[in-house]
Image 1 (tube, rainbow, N blue to C red):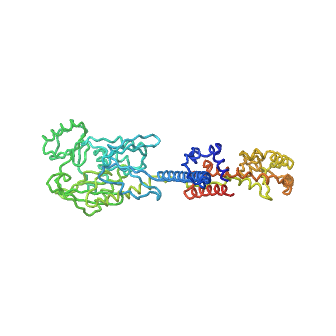
Image 2: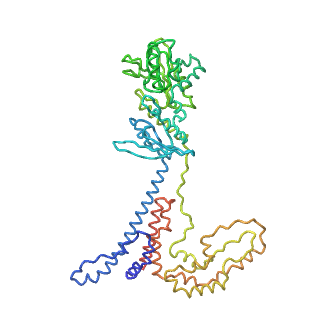
Image 3: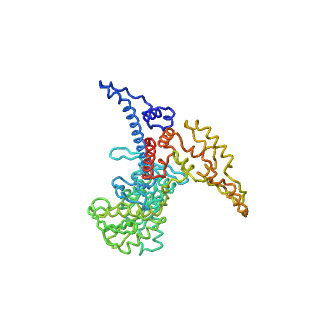
Length: 568
């Protein structure tokens, strides 16, 4: 037995049939054995032990390589499936808020994880195509380490101002690229672009003022100057001049008389931008009404340092009750530019007891007060709802089981053909066609059996059995081909009798296939070993198998190979 295995495993044709990397140690020469001891008994046992240990070492290495390859294939499939089941959320915000922690463990559509990518406008760039494809390049510093990534976002939320003349930042081109890529966002990218100029937003508020009137919507009076040329004088003083588009109180100047007003006009000329003027309101406190989804909050801010800008210097902030009047303000303003899910209205309450609406903010509004953590949770829930609504559910194909058209390994095909009393089934004729026997006649089968018997010697040298090559009717029985359907017609009356006459009787079948089903035992063992490690035809690495089926298939192949090797 061991001599046969040694001859077979040393055959170059057998080694060449193995897949790359399997049992490669058989191709290397064995290392020189240490000098034998003086005792003659170990000398006699040395050769069988070395041959046996080399063979079992080769089998062990093959099993280890098979298991490692299967695990690697399954791990790659798992990682690919996990990558496909994640949606990318791009959050444009400063790094002081860790949005990835808020979205950890969250899912959309119940199946997709959320991968958060957070960066500022200055750290991202993009390329957008007309078909809606948008790729974003991000270069950020995390813990003094530069991180460079490229990805295709599925959803966007902007928490940073894309345009500010005070900081000389203009990222409206990024907003245009995101809109060009048809990416969903909160708020809409169209509204974010419209909020890049405060006079444009104030014009929308003026239309609301005309529709509702000063009692329901008390909007402050404002004058717009496209440039410095018309800034000559004002009817009343003091006034507040707002130069260009800026945030957090920057670009705002209080002018007491017309001399100072002319000086400010020269500054506007140097800035080469627009300006607006409003009457100065001696305020008692500021009011801010914010809306996040369906949640409303109202805050009151009172200056402590005495500065007319309550957002500059020391101020006291407290939450106040939400009234129906405040709710009306923020609701009508949330209808701007197709709808704002996140917005806030700023107003001042003068010492005269009147309220004046001065500004509307969008999703870039800062969070204030003692409930900032709650507001972040509200933003997270709003983003999840919008992602479930705006991101389509993509179907993921479920793993399919292997079909039953696989050819059995080893001699199972021969055994199925040579069972006693079995009769090869014939394919039914097309409807309406002539009925002809598909199998060969009895005389031709006898001649074929004699021809096979005379070629048994060459077949035992490793070639495929001629039975599979010379009997097309049995091959088509294993894998029937799909015939094109023909128009149905009236069946022929004599058709069943002709078909029964064309079939050879069961008793007259030759007994030669029983002799052909007895292959050479050594050939059967070598072929079973080769088939056991022929993973190119196996269903082990198919993408539609799960982990349990892959393990079961590996164990089944190894069990067949060992059973055929050590059957004697």
